[in-house]
Amino acid sequence: MNQKIEFSQLSIEIEETDSQVVYYFSGDVNENFNQSDVPLISRSRIVLDLKGVENFNSCGIREWIYFIRSLTGKGSIFFRNCSIATVDQINMIPDSLGGASIESFYAPYFCQEHGESIQLIEVEKNRDDLMHLVAPKFKCSECGKDLEFDALEESYFMFITQGSEEKKVS
Ligand SMILES: [Zn+2]
Figure (cartoon, rainbow, N blue to C red):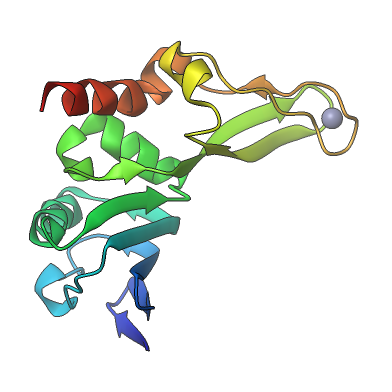
């Protein structure tokens, strides 16, 4: 069963199967987002696909934190394909992650010759690098040379290292 909820600058598409529900977020999480309009669906896996999230503002993030809290207990929550805006947001306000686990996220890289290149990082596959604040290696799709990471590892990957510390304690 699929359904779509529209706010003025944000749309959320919900895709359900027997074992999992995926919420696809697309647009801006701002004052137009009203989390109580979004159905809370219990499944063993609850995935938030955040590839399309472009922006958060402070009103939006408050709603977002309520939304993640409301989902807590309804299944294991995973953030997938986190956009760069989402990563920045979680690094700034760790509560935005709640008890969710990060499956994958985008990161900025660049090639000296071919410019900016956004890469998707799978957390499980790259956990060792990430825990040591080392950017996983990618090659430029045009010239095959190694891309350079275009952010500060210790601040960009902070949400990964902190998340796991919290989980160890609890
Ligand atoms: Zn290149």
